[in-house]
Length: 334
Ligand SMILES: NC(=O)c1ccc[n+]([C@@H]2O[C@H](COP(=O)([O-])OP(=O)(O)OC[C@H]3O[C@@H](n4cnc5c(N)ncnc54)[C@H](O)[C@@H]3O)[C@@H](O)[C@H]2O)c1
Image (cartoon, rainbow, N blue to C red):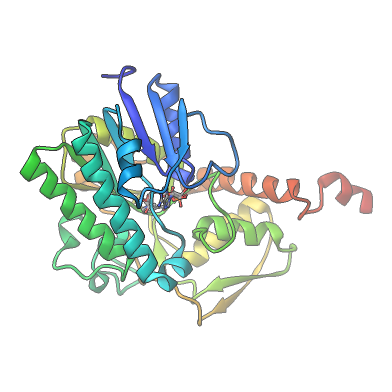
């Protein structure tokens, strides 16, 4: 199959999809990318790229013609502010994308379909403490997921399992935990914490302030994009059809994340906590026992290394846009 398979990546104009296309092309696969938009920061390396709205059945049929494998990453999503404010749109848009994509892929004869789920499917009642017990896959039920985004992801997981049971359709289900890295959205409301913090730190003056959503004691684990893509490719190649966590199990507070990014930038900043802003569940971590058992592997890129690369990319984007002083201008001013 390797090198010969024809692969469809939906959401190929987005963060994870764009990186995945690049990786699959490096391995010699033929790749089609579909999205509502082209990748923002770099040209796609897909053999074919089409702009299609995958909420529509006819477009899902077009997208899945002649492909062997489907990575279904297209979704209406964003950071905690966005997913808290848009329950109806997110649920409707993503339910349409996932139900249509699954059936179109099956009826057009694809032999594998990977669905990108989220740690947001885990019950809120298990995430009330900053010092949480890491979540294992079987914790998903009894269900009490994140409103909107978590419920539609959990339903789509179930739908994949029904397709496997009723049609023998080979589905794969991945539950991502906070993916970050270069070439991701870093402003506008859809960005996640590592990108938002990197932008705020880059724009802040040394010795100045940084705004933090909540008290900053909320905890998460973060996975660098290269580990995410590696896990995706491994899961697709495996014979495991049940939901699987994909994340790191190093728990940090948002305050610690800010300190790490500030260290990378060489800045000392005072945190200003805004308790009116949404912060999601109190704590969330990934239990990687099953991941290790199924794939014989787990993410290993350290947060320090990943943040260095992410910060330096966001800083260079802001510099290119003329929003930071250049080194030369800074030196000239002295
Ligand atoms: N990044 C994370 O930390 C994270 C965590 C959990 C789950 N996920 C899931 O992983 C997948 C990829 O996430 P990402 O971080 O790359 O997000 P992203 O927003 O960068 O990419 C998603 C892409 O889907 C596209 N899209 C949205 N609606 C569409 C439609 N109707 N038709 C076609 N394309 C459409 C968007 O334009 C976007 O480019 C999503 O399913 C997301 O829910 C991501």
